[in-house]
Image (cartoon, rainbow, N blue to C red; front, top):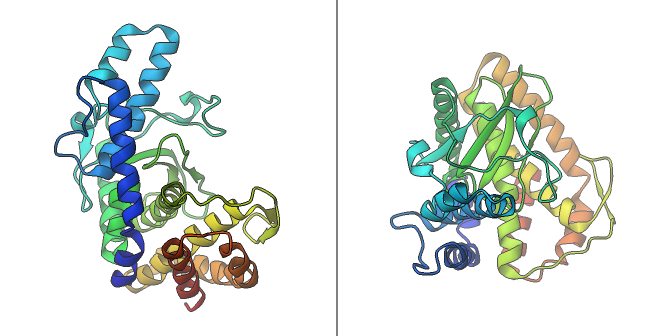
Length: 304
């Protein structure tokens, strides 16, 4: 599992994308100093640069000069002051109030942009997050979360067994939004799922792969036909959680173990129905390396 994860998530086109776009954003915000944030990993600087860009754009539209100047002066969107140390590096863990989050043309779902008023989540939530990152890294997903789950927005606290909502938005790559229960294994599973979406978005952009937006692939998770884009995302993100869950079952007991075992059984059944359509959808991925990564994860999850 560790070897698989290292091979799958270390994708040079994504690394080039991160560097190039970060420089472009910094050039827009600070044309006199177009460079990546000193000392920052390319993926971290890439994620935080998008927060600074969104914040600066919003400030410019409303004439908030002081806020705009703050973003120009903080290409890391203030992350250094709000960092939580984890196994995969410093992360920004926040807990915004869901009802207060904005909705706008940039996203169909609520979102949060780091800014001058950002404060880190409460200590117990940051500890929960750090434990979740550690469990994910121990299962071989450290590389994925290092590059694609830099900012974690913890939303509603729920009970094990409740429906947990989580999502990402393309305008804030490397950021994940999610409900949570007081369990680092469950949080790790969901972090991997959302980071997987961020990874695939970047991989498609980095390789220039354009997939059909016409529904034609049955998704057992949505119970409807979906375009290749959404179908391939599901057939990548859910298998990643299956691989993590299979690993986690060796390290859990009691109600947590039963919950994860039931989840894995459910996902096995759903994934089994996608075999033919997945092969057909992969024909739209012209990059050989990306197509092989998607196929490998799907095949390994089917074998669980």
